[in-house]
Each structure stands twice: as C-alpha cells, then as structure tokens.
Image (cartoon, helix red, strand yellow):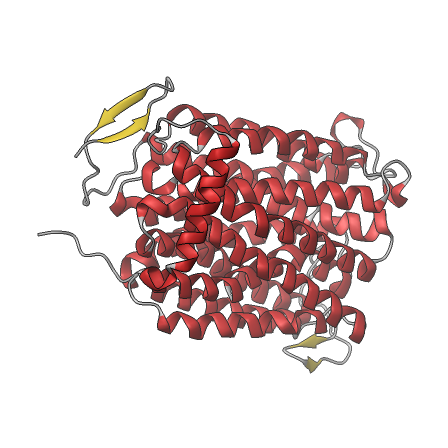
Length: 471
C-alpha cells in the first residue's frame, strides 16, 4: 500500500512503502537529522557548558544558588511539558503533519535565545529570575518540538535505517557544537581583544553564545522543513475539536494500557533512567565550574571534549542497536552512564573516586587540567557523555520499535510526560540534596538511584531486539 507524504513543495506525493533492507540514508533522513544538529548546541552550550555556568556564577553571583535556580527552571518547564506534551502528541496523530507545529515551536524559540544577550552580570538589565523564565520558556518549546520531531522519525527514515538516522542526528548535534565551541574559543575567549571588539569585562563573549546558537539552529532547521517526509495529511484542521479529540484518544490509550504494556513499561523505565541522564547533562557544567573551580576557558574546553564524546556516542548507539537491538543497547548505555557519574561525583580538586589526594602535583606543564584529579574528572566525564548521548538515541529507536505507528505521536507525547516527570523530580531532588548537604556532589546521589531503577525495569520490556535482514 502506498505511503502518502509531504514533498518539498508541501504538496502530497505518493511514494512506495519503505523497504526493510538498504544501508543508505536518503535526503529526507539526512535533513531530519540535521534539524537536531542545529538544535542540540543549545543543550550543550547554553544549558550545559557555557551560558548556564555564566548565569550561575555571574548573573546570580553564587554557584550553589545558581545550580538550585537552574534546577527550579527544570521543575517549572518539566511540569508544563508534562501537561502539554501528551495532548500535543495525540492531537498531531489525528491531524497528520508535524512540520507546521514544529515550525511554530522553532520560530518562537529562536527570538528567546537571542534575548539572552541582555543577561548582564549581576542581573543589571534582566533580573536572574527573568533570565530563568526565558530559559524555562525555551525548554518548554524545545521539549514540545522534541515530541513532534521524534515522532517524525518513522516517516523521515526507512525502518531499517531508523537507528542510524537517530544516532546520526545526535552526532550532528555534537559536530555543530564542536564547531561553535572552537569558533568561540579562538574568536572570543583566547584573544586579548575578542572578535568584533567584544568586552570581556561585561562578559560579552559569554553572552554572544546564545546568538550563535540561535543562528545555527535557524540555518540547520531549513532543510528538514524543505525535504524531510512528514506524516500524511488528513482532512482535519487544527481546532478545539481536534484538540479534544486528541485528549480523548490519549485517555483511551491510557485506559487500554494493557494492549501496549511493553511500551508503557518502557516509558516508566525511561522516566527513571534516561531523563536522569538529562539532569546530568543539564547540570554537569555548573557542577564542574563549582566543584573543580574552572573558569570560562576551562569550561569551554571541557564542553568541547563533551561534544566529541557525544559525537562518538551517536555513532556508538547505531552500532549497539544493530548488534544487540535497542533494548539491550539502552541497558548497556545506562550502565556506562552510571559508571561515568560515579567517577564525576567522586572527584574534587584533591580527590579521585572519593579517595583524597594530598597536595596533587602537576603531571605536565600545560595551560589547564594539569593534576591527576582534573584528568580523572575529564576522563570520567568523557566516558559518561559517550554512553549518555548513545542512550538518548537508543531510547528513541526503542520506542519506534514497540509503539504502534498510528499512535507514534501520542506515545512520544507520553514519553514527554514520563520524561518530564523525572525532569522536574530529578532537579527537585538535586536541589534538595544540594541545599541540605551544602554540597554539589551530594546533589547528584538521587540521579544514580534513578539510573539503576530504569535499568532493571527494562528487563520487563518485551521486544526491541535486533532486527534481522530478510532473506
């Protein structure tokens, strides 16, 4: 039976059903992956390594208070997406195409990113809570966009190529992040006089990061809207009735959870494990800046290494999915993430794996990362990032294998609900443990527990095994 999809012109065109075999990604899959290539630098450069540490240490003025505030941003945005995401996913299943709604999320997010230029030190122009509100709004838009974008995977890529496309998308996100990090390093951080005459005294090199990220996002999004296959159009228009229909469909899906028990158990496992990794990725930059005492240049290099790890992780996910199937691959990746996390929280300027190192000496005469504890922190962080980025890819591929295609949007919406349950609970526990124990290391203890719970729940999920090429 032919599959109807939206062509580059926006008109419906008929294409033959995707073959199961084949090893080459087409233009549709590449364009789909490139969208994430433009979006992910926000996660690495703004939420992770550069802007978030600047916000915590300079705009807020206190690393511990800043980490707690960023955790509160996660709570607010997570709760919002928990309500909006499932309804959005179920509604687009009834409407068909995802691109119009994804375009709206993209067009709203980019100007908000640009506004972060006005986040001056000390909150002299935009108060810390105003900046936090902007970050929360962007997080909501990107999370809703993730529901729409991920549910496009079954249309944008051939079934046999979906693991490769999913991993490629994450790898491209790290390629663009690496390119931006290198540009920022050599254009703004290292020179005595930064490019464009930016002032280091007012932290303009830190504040220009969101502008560069927004521009990259806009450019990389264009091919997806032009060339990627979308869900077929149906004879419905967006209205209150269609939204209510989406709600009704979602309620029916939950009521009949036994019919899709494997997907439901998976969503719980993802809630506990995969989004615990999201907490780790969001707060790792603030953690490194506060615990290791690294400045902007060290954080940029640390972010660069993290992006290299993510690039490797994206391709590793595709390979692991092919070798073991996405379910076992996901478990392997969770285990690797936990090992990396243990190494990170067990590190300090005078500590490796919780073992105190008296007066650590320089191992080499380099400009940074000269002591054994610093090198151990980098190694554990790199190891954890490889497996965590791979886990993001395998978790997406696993859901496309065990959820019905006709309800893919609803299930990715439920994934947003499940994920954001952890994305606000995780930051809540991190904030509580950080505040109670007055320690950034203690703040990450609950994340380890969430990882472990998700790992064991995956044993209850049937399906998601290795696909065999037809004879």
